[in-house]
Length: 208
Image 1: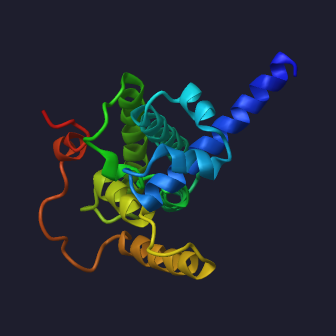
Image 2: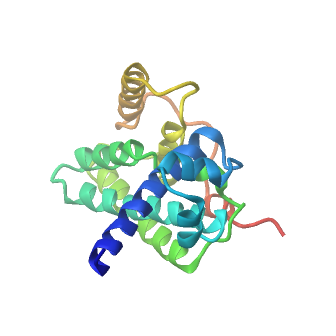
Image 3: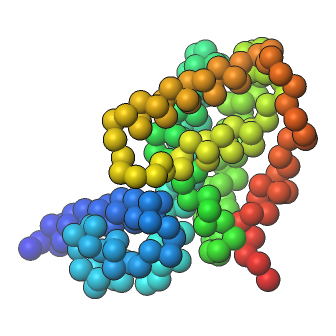
């Protein structure tokens, strides 16, 4: 096999591994053995360990990908002409790839510089999506960027049991209800203070 052919095969194996890892970790829990990931991806343990030496490295890569997709979703939302549609596009895109499904791993792995840098960019851009919708008067004024992020986390969690078309239909129904609840002016006063950035980012700090 040529060098280019080997590189293409390695890239395909990596993609299978990442998809399998995301599915295994988010459905079986983060304590799932890496052997389950290799089996789901249809690759050998040697292939997995050549690419990711530890489970932590694999989780770091998955988190980084989620952050990168968050950046892309926010950029697409900002490119939309209508501020409300841009916000809805952003939220739906993040939910579609379960951007918040890896949130439970917060505080259990080291945050790399690349993760921190990408997360900062994602937060900045999502903040612009939210600010634009609020300035246009279409998003209720008491909803913050972190409220939106935590809403995405809630809809990223897998439902119990095997996935099904019915589950997806119900999720989209509930998401539409939630999105309508974000519209200005808002019918009910939100209880409590909004989540702080210190609390949100602090979840990723490893316990000393």
